[in-house]
Length: 431
Image (cartoon, helix red, strand yellow):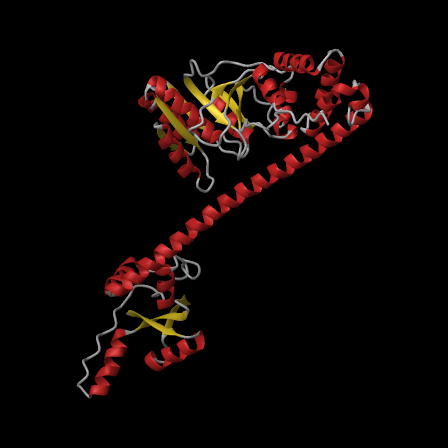
């Protein structure tokens, strides 16, 4: 047997060409588009083709070989083709058993071109199956991300309703009626920068007890700063640290910054970054790039078992930073903390994040974070939502960064520094 390829403008023309060249009984193996043409693969009986050619040349015909005897029912050529190319039996295997020696002899009789076509078809089927599995995984990830977005929107709406009710109860949408005229620009600045109603009520009380704006700002910074805990993480950052956060929060860059700064203290071979189970498109490439910019080795694991084995190999390192996926943050962090009870989990939050998104991860019944790290703490960004969430909470802040680049180092931040940053650039107008 031999496979032949026929190309034509469309399927009808291709079939006419097949009938013209090989007769109406030619077996069509496949029919698909190739280079804007229709490609048909047909199986040709070489003995029949040779016989027809001899008839045309009027040469003496060779004696036809005796048909080979087989034990049991022989499978049809269609079944053999289906089983070899498309990995299907064409029915119940018990009804059409295919002797091993027959299949081997048939494959051995194929030409090199036929075997190449078979290999290409098998590779195409394997790639199709792999793409289908990858698409399913990507679809599951997209569905999970969509659910998280819907939940976040619901939480945002709930927070807005709560703010509205609180504003009605306090009768302080503007807040200007309860302060002196010279203090009204300060209250209006709080309104303009999105300070939550609860913080505005606290600030209004402090303003009413102050004699001027400078004294009021100093007292507000002291009140807010003393209510937000902080830790000094950079001086002695060792062991295993888990960096978590939602997609777009800047956690991978934060992991790179911390690794780069630790490498300057301990040496590049004493620090490693591990990307754990992040299946997003391009996530591993981003991790490799960040690790390269930080000057440390970067590894990837897709399961807790692989992570545990890798950590045993990296046991001599002084600092290991594990970068986690941006979706299903609490589930991934919880699984890691069960596997690594001595690891320190840190939550990366954008300084301009809404209060609903911050409270989604910082809540009494949630994970007990070792610290909160701030990204995008730029001039003109007012982290009121984070300050309001961390008031009288045990969760401390640790480091912050402004620019979305690994070149911008992470610096230690305290509650007072966070409050002063929010108050330093208020859009106060004295018109």
